[in-house]
Image (cartoon, rainbow, N blue to C red; front, side, top):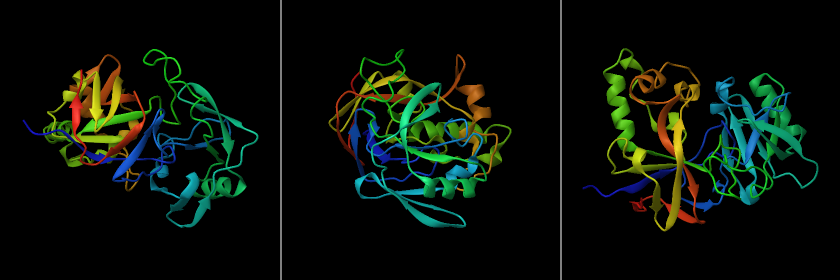
Length: 274
């Protein structure tokens, strides 16, 4: 049997924007360090995602010291944004939750508003330890999450991606495949496991860090957006609807909750505990 290892790590500092792939990352109780600690909100305080704004994927966010970020996007001058000072907060409506965050300031707001063509504000999650609980149906008391859709981490596997791409090639839109893993915006990608093996996991260890598998990840229209060009297609949702429907979810990947903090590194062994 092939050895299961951590193939790659992905951190998305700004929700809905492009991510980066470090060789290692710190695992905090609410997710990977620096992952989805920033979010854009619209005039109704709703989190801005790629669903209505696919051009968000064209925004690159480079982490800087102290949690600051350097923003870049086509046709825009780069902008450095510092973590805002503690002070007045604003409400962010995200995935049916209402979360408090700290506004980043007028310069960042103008930068994003000009790029997207709508009025938005940039908000920082100042206290992920207390601001937003994980869905209580799948969490334990005190477990929290950042500005991710609902859970601290998302894990996927190369074996499942290969199987999905085979199904796409056999379907009625083969020209849309093969799809890269960035369509699914995971945090951790595993290699050396069989296709869909993650469906049966309850607890895993990556290196010395242990995780509980909370629930399957139901996929949305964001997976149909090319993460390099922002162009929309039909896959993988057409194929997932035919082959990976579980109740009302089209599933690819599993949501994780850390059982303890630590660090993970590319090449770490992945062990299935339960």
